[in-house]
Length: 459
Ligand SMILES: NC(=O)c1ccc[n+]([C@@H]2O[C@H](COP(=O)([O-])OP(=O)(O)OC[C@H]3O[C@@H](n4cnc5c(N)ncnc54)[C@H](O)[C@@H]3O)[C@@H](O)[C@H]2O)c1
Image 1 (cartoon, protein in one colour):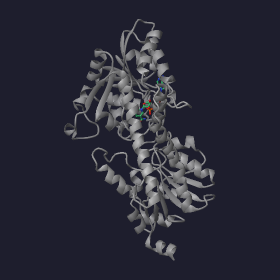
Image 2 (cartoon, helix red, strand yellow):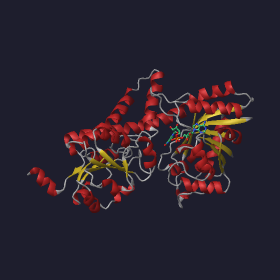
Image 3 (cartoon, helix red, strand yellow):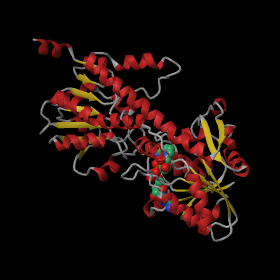
Image 4 (tube, helix red, strand yellow):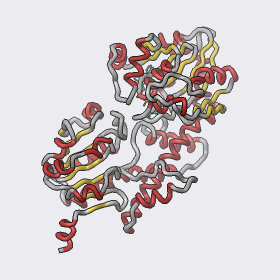
């Protein structure tokens, strides 16, 4: 089928590439002209595992094209809107990019179009889109509007798109539902040439869940808010563990063994970030408020998350006493591993707080440094984890990239002013680190002190 994707960000680019991979003819548009030029010249504007290879493959066989939004609208029978929906100052989702696309569709489209919201939007956006398309339509075109929320995770977006647990679509006409079923059929049947695995036929087929548009829109916001709630919950349990001398990893393990709870999203840390959870929780609170529902539970989720940065800085202060003039290594800037995305990354907030107290930061991230430089230009960016730790009074692990688990700790200890690791993700082993002479501080009562240091402190 001929499909269009509007917006070549993390979601749009993955969507366009994967829809082409499963056999469709896709035209992807991007309004940022630098980004568009890169894509047209085969240069990736973002880092996402496997995506570059998929794009290269489908472009070679002529199934993926990049260009303007106007041309994309002329191209596809179905149009996926994947533009950003950032938060406004009051927490509402900013839908101006969605509105702009709707206007262009209304002006340019001829004949029938299925317009699909894949961007995360508040409930009832589909109804607004429908109204807007008919008000601004000039060509007598017919539209269906459907919601198709995206659940992919940055860092594994290609895998998540091709092997999802569920595909949710919300449509109010059988024609729209049928079209979406046809588009996704290869994924539902798990019948496509998989660019990642050789054992795909063994994979589980996803559930194709068809609902009305409002319910589909709510499924996305409710899912993200629920996951954010789980994170804030375990972070409060972590605080309690620190206060009473318990170990949050054991508590989380014990909780997660209950199948009604499950182990996912029970990792305490420096709080959630990225372009989804913080803004989606805010937008969900706002839409609930406007609908007369007091979702104060989620306000607490947000508040707990906002306090994580200060809590972590306090932990660092407890260890280093005075921060002014201290050299501090930061490992990890992206909001999570395997992405270069630093939007709402807690690591950046932590760095700003430490800098405000006069600490000197030496930072390293395997992929996110270019994007971080736009946000915080005035810190020392290093080539690798060892260079960042040179002469440092502490290493702070803020993003759990795999390479930080494979560090040569003996070498590292020799480079640092003081052998102190503060692990904001509980990603490292306290036993391993203490065996190399490090003092280890994790989240939620997880810590380790080498024998020599213990006797020194205890006299
Ligand atoms: N990033 C994620 O992990 C994720 C996961 C699921 C859902 N979402 C949702 O998907 C949406 C997109 O997120 P993202 O992370 O891909 O954002 P993004 O900022 O990376 O990408 C959006 C892109 O759309 C482009 N754009 C804006 N207006 C345009 C127009 N008129 N024509 C063409 N291009 C246009 C922007 O230049 C940008 O490149 C958001 O609503 C987000 O909440 C994101």
